[in-house]
Image 1: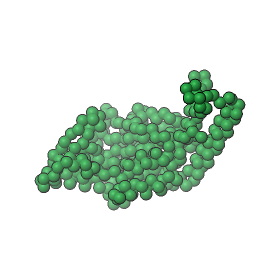
Image 2: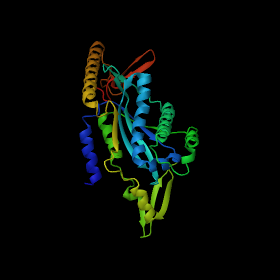
Image 3: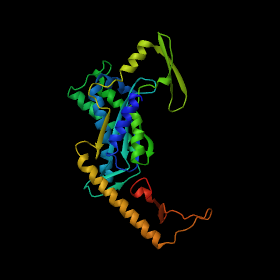
Image 4: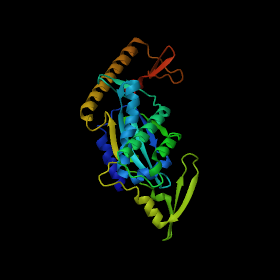
Length: 312
């Protein structure tokens, strides 16, 4: 078994006890190309900061607007499909979270990625500006004398917070993010040719689905690969919100208890409702029909979404 696959399976097994069985949303926080040189020059300092700023971007919105703290898992990738340095954060966030008084679970299936774009942009630019004032950053020669002008121009750019898949339950979520945790910079199948002097590899443009073929020297190919090797001790996976290591041992049992109580209440409600109502038969096959949702005053609520991804 490949070492990457083995490591992924171990991580998935260890993570099953961490993730509550609720739906999750995949988000991707990206950085404009203009900032990549600055980040590469301050690699450890700024990559660590990206984790904190992405987490803060989401929790700032959920706490301010919905009064709950979500569970957050983040994975850093420093590479794009063309192998160039392109740092971005893959985040899985619970569709809802624990109320601020730790008394209830608040469902929320709306993630305002358009709003998060401006918050993310402001957080990153402000952090870089403040860090530079404290002389914590090495600045590229082209940026150094004109840092404020350079950062001000970044406000005119669109900072993408991409909305990915919505994942239905914890086990599927863990398997999904597991593919990102140990993903190699390039799959061997994409390396098409090597003649001792140059390497040919392919990549697909995600926006257009067009396939491109790149021929570069062996030295350039090696440079593109080794720049993505993490610094010693650097953690590619981070947690935030109720999953943060300093609080999760206390908060996850509370969340699991709340979700179990909701599950029991829903089961009791459905049982009472089905006892009260005559179970309808399917007009096509004659089988008993299963209650999956309730509609009232034009609003439909799926029973499974009240507590988990699986119907009772």
